[in-house]
Amino acid sequence: MERRSFLGGLASIWVASQRLDAAVPTNGQHLADAVRGQVGVTTGYDPTWTRLTYPGGDVARSTGVCADVVIRAARDGLGLDLQKLVHEDMAKHFDAYPARKAWGARTTDPNIDHRRVLNLEAYWARAGARIWVAEAPTPGNSFPKPIEIGDILTWLLQARLPHVGIAVSASPNPRVVHNVGRGAEEISIEDFSQERAAAHYRWPVAQ
Image (cartoon, rainbow, N blue to C red; front, side):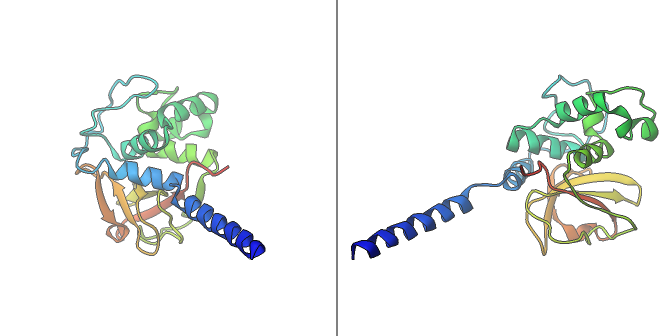
């Protein structure tokens, strides 16, 4: 009886620890919770260049661009500052970023670099966070599965305009929070069916 009680106690402890582990939010869940918190707060869209404080700079929370959705989620949910991370990496590896080729930049600009999707994509790829990148035109609702909560997805809208959002639910029918001009909103990935999928990231990379 004593041995059975002891083994039963160990089993109960193991089950309890498994439940506790399952209840601990992942980085992805933190990102998803933080990005959902922007819905109804960010109600506008403004791509205007704005002088920001550094680090931790932001435009008014009521507005912004698609990249600001991700930047704010990273700060709010994970305490990570993409403004600082991108700027520091660009300062060391400027030619690894598309800034010179895409818009003729000759040096870094911490007011805007992190707010450009192409720069974010370069940073995430360099950080080892890229899971998939389109090698051929792919419908915007046809990212290879699985997509997990908190994954970062990018598109080319109208086959040319870089765009980014965060998955707040997982495959097979992910939903995404993004800002395409109406403020932060949650939509189905199916709403991107007429656009082109660009890349899929899971960041920060698990250690």
